[in-house]
Amino acid sequence: MSTERKTIFIVDDDLTNLTVGNEVLSEYYNVFTLNSGPLLLKRLERHVPDLILLDVNMPEMNGYEVIRCVKEKEETQSIPIIFLTAQSDTESELEGLSLGAIDYISKPFSPPLLLKRIEVHLLVESQRQELVSFNNNLLDLVFDKTNTILELQNAILKTMAELIDRRDHSTGGHIDRTQRYMRIILDKLVKQGLYQRESSSWNLNLVVQSTQLHDVGKIAIQDSILQKPGKLTEEEFEKIKGHTTHGEEIISEIQKNTVEQKFLEYAKVFAGTHHEKWDGSGYPRGLKGEQIPVLGRAMAIVDVYDALVSDRPYKQRFTHEKAVAIIFDSRESHLDPVMVDLFMGIADSFKESL
Image 1 (tube, rainbow, N blue to C red):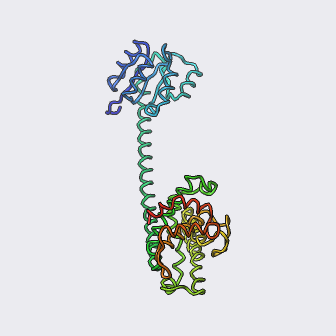
Image 2: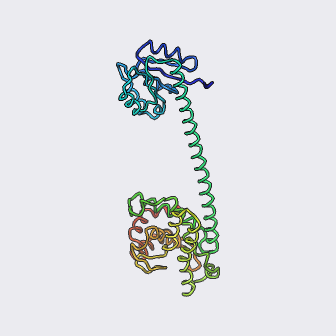
Image 3: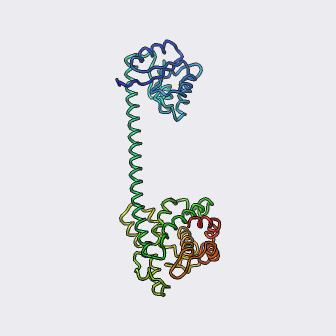
């Protein structure tokens, strides 16, 4: 027998059964006797025992009614319940077991048998609780480990994106800003129920995180072009345009070596489509209208806004108000009209996030 004293409730409307049960069990357990179902339910509001011995046939509430009430409440539903009954028909036992009882003990009960059955069931319950605790601890460890890996992954990606950002002297801080803008625009898009077919499958945290790689293809562009202080020649601009397809290729190579595909799928969309235009005049593929993925259309707004409010070698930054006006004028030419209308309602949030 365990040295730890467990608590047992005996519920029976027969005083003799309560007295005998108390005498048999009190040497080993803390025993409380109750003569009705309602008294048990009242007592359970203050004290949860380790096991309940419950009479089936009681006048005010029978055992089946009582066990239903016990099992309905989260705080009490895991308490092991053994039915005490003078009945021995299979149908009654099946009903009790189906309601959550763990065993039946016939009355009048044999003290040694009662003690042994209780000992076995308390041991099983103790092992069950240990297993639950172990599983919870294991889940916590897995969660912590997963978070650590995700944080490491994010730190590596952020560092790589920042290195690319620093190579292009004209876009300092672009990566951080585009993440903030993307969070604002996608949160609003989801809240308004726009593009539900596409957005219903998004993991927004991964989507926003993956924007870091939208310009990853610039790693393949020469410093002399990225860092050129003046306007690019037509040939140089053609090479710059290649950063979209280079980005897709780089992300495809990463995909071959990792099981984390969703994040990279989002990143690939951003890398390959953020310079496409609603009227089909963009690059690299000249996609038009709804041929452009929704995330690419959202990134186009974000990318254009940041370019307009930032200094570039070929221009000074525009004011927020001027940038908003230019974006509105680009509705149905460069930019998705639905996205522009959405942006117009949250433009002040972009300004606050500058």
